[in-house]
Image (tube, rainbow, N blue to C red):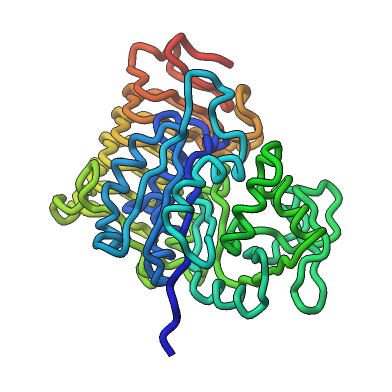
Amino acid sequence: MIKTKEALVLLLAGGVGSRLNILVQNRAKPAVPFAGLYRIIDFSLSNVMNSGLKKVGVLTQYKPLSLMSHLAGGEAWDFTGRSRGVKILPPRTGSRDSDWYKGTADAVRRNIDFIEANPTDEVLILSGDHIYHMDFDAMIEYHRSKKADVTIGMMVVPKSEIHQFGAGIIDRHNRIVEWEEKPKVPRTNLASMGIYVFDRKYLLNSLARDRDEVDFGMHILPWAIDNDNVFAYPFYGYWRDVGTIQAYWEANMDVIRKDSGISPQKWGIRTNVEAQGRPADRAPARFGQKAHLRNAMISAGCDIRGTVEHSLLAPGVIVEEGAVVRNSILFADCHISRNAIVDLAILDKRVTVGEHAVVGAGENYMIANRLQPTHLYTGITLIGKGARVPAEQKIGRNCAINSYIREEAYSRTVMEDGDSLFPDGEIS
């Protein structure tokens, strides 16, 4: 029997993602590059494509230009044709903060006209900022088999992490009987993945009920659980919320770790190779006679003459002779000069590190960033897009260098652990 593919997809891609710090200074969180070739949103979009779903509305808000450029007309994910497509749904806003989306449910409510223009049996609501592989068709069939009003994708996480998620308590039939949103003292280890299947009429009625209900996790779902049929759809595969610098770094490293469970190629993850940077036009990577690589992912257009270990390099990265890159993530077109060292760092696009400079100096990982101690505290140093590190400069652990910083902005040759550098000078 041929299964029907009638669900409409709403992909929420408007969050600020502030915990990703400098990486979201110039782009929306779902547009942040991942694993060299991809953007974070590629995983959700590819899952939709591979599940056979055809109509997607992408709800944007925060700094959407790079995201919109990446999505283009949806051709990269085969969302073209009379019966399929990706539609960008920009915010319906004015000039005041109060005009912006107040939460996930509010964002969907303000795009009801898109739901009404695309009548389906179910509406699948996703976040555009998770790394995972999932068959949504199977989840929709499960939703139908349960005759559910709402079905929530859920998975087991350590109780120490449950405070970051919505948490559900289920009965023996997987019906959710209680809900806790980001509980400080959890009674369950079953966490919401932010993936919802709604009966379409039920969703429209829920959104019409009370306009003060602006968030799914805080308002819509608790009410539904108390009054109607809400089920948990158990998920057992790889899934990671990459909303923090540490989680983002770990997920990237999982790509080059053996048996980590993540495999973008096997999962059939696609990206727009014709977007900015045009990786499709890059020449093959080149390796000099003294190049040394160990457990590294090297993209097209790279020129490697030094050492790269346990790192992921996006297209066009240059590592000159004598330079060392280890435990790091380098975005497109970074340039690591002769005898420079980059250790445990994330470099945004077009960063230049001068000769004999060190990014990630010293062995003290314990001094958190003074300006953002909850963002940088595990030793990772961030360098923003287009920044330049002077020759012989030393930058410690948990440091942050703002985008487009030039050599003359450095007031001293050593940046201590936890320091930050912004256009108006170094801040300790």
